[in-house]
Length: 522
Image 1: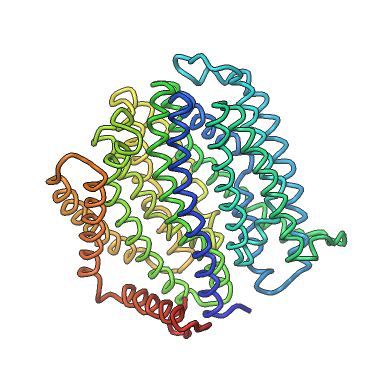
Image 2: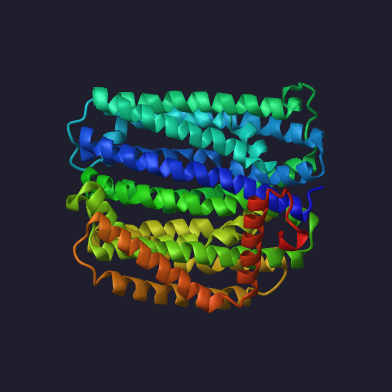
């Protein structure tokens, strides 16, 4: 049985590995993007973003099995029920084999018609073959996912992160070399496919070494009650999967269909930075998810809610700080990185930032919902969110242009996930009212707006952007935001908790101590 101390240490270890990997990955990605735009046209950049989104839509056949798998493993792992773990993994192995095969089948079927999604089709050779390579790259991942899911559910995400980010960094280096020597997009994509295969094989072999029982052929069939529970979760997650795909992965398809590949290329640069930043921030929650799952199985609802309040506070601070930083520095960064012709207007950037913040503030609720397996209770929410998003985005796109897509997504969040997700979590997870959640949200939002006004107002006084001015803006937005948050929340229980935890981590690092006292754990 994992205690409070072990859960915290596991979370911190997972987080440290992921953060280092992600930071290195971001640096390599930025360098790779510079080489990409200088060796290939912006249309190829748009093609890469478009195909990535189409593949995400095709992955709807996954039906949310991944989160359901990880959730179903928490209890048997906590109870060390090897027999049940083996049976669950066998089921998911078969499911993922079918999913990967279906993605290949659907992808090959769609390939001949792919040009209909591109307005003003540019002169690009072998565009259909390139799409098939994207399809194969996506399908390969599913053939090995079940073993990696066990590693993650067992609170060993640091192992998965080592392979994921190590492979990503090496891939980008090789792709840069390929672009410099051959300037060939097909070779660029083939490298991605090869690295994906090798990475998954290595991760799979590591899982076999960590869990020798994976090689056992003596696997008992699952009883009907377990299968019924899994089916219920998968059915609910299928709706969540559909909603998230429509909301998060149709932007480039709409832009390509109504505006063109060049606009997709421009947006892809913003999306690269925001996605990288979002992935970094999400690791705080992903690293804690398996520990939260363990916590919800072994601890009381009151204790689980107490931990949620801490993670919710962390959620606000991280995404509030990040949103203010993006507001002040995103356009100057794009301008210095790629040039003025790749910059959006400030009105569009503001919509992108609002979407980033609203989506980010859902992390704490979604982390606990996933860890506690509450998918069933809000299963219709993603369907409503997807329909509102798609309809609003198309209507507003025709009225406002590209900014209408982001405004449509904002409206879909405010009318659904913003209030439904915390309501479900509190009602069915904590068995209490969600009033305190929205009171806290209003305080957090007001703090972010105030920090944004102060930071942007000061940064606007600085002269034309240079690298030195950008550094000054980053310093200003960082200092103003964090000082304001500190003065507003320094006396709160959540701030005091993280303050003491940080001090203890530093003390342990300096003195090379191996333990954290229970009082500073989740």
